[in-house]
Image (cartoon, rainbow, N blue to C red):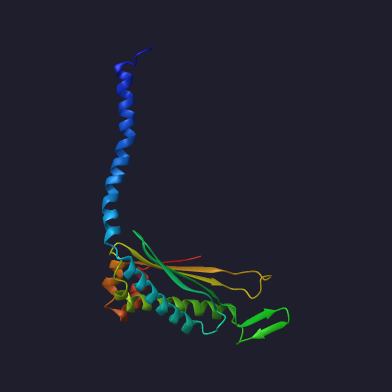
Length: 198
């Protein structure tokens, strides 16, 4: 049986330590995160999310009064380490519904300019909503985010081409708390938010 040289044994030990040290560091970095998870009151977070969903659904109903516009109501979830995320789906073309028996109207058809203006106005209402209800989301840490993902679908019937649009509004809780006492400066706050559209 061959014996390993001291140099080779040292090389193996150093290699093993090279793999273990980053793992141990990563594990040590997770200790504050694990402690933060233990501090989170998930029952309270759930109540806050349900309350914010109700307010958000109310604003959606006021902004898109057509009863067929709201496809999926706002639903929220708390993601530890990230924050709270709310999403919903709106069909902006539901002024007239195409059926196999004809077209059923529930208002005038919207032009592309009308749709764009309606979505822009809705984004502004969401920004003001966040400022008005910043104090309702107390379980979030300052470094966590509040994100609203609005999915807009523009179609009437399954055979027709879809023209979808997604708007994501996101803000850190600490920024929201800083600006919450300034509702008249919502336009400035909107510029500081992260807004992505695609």
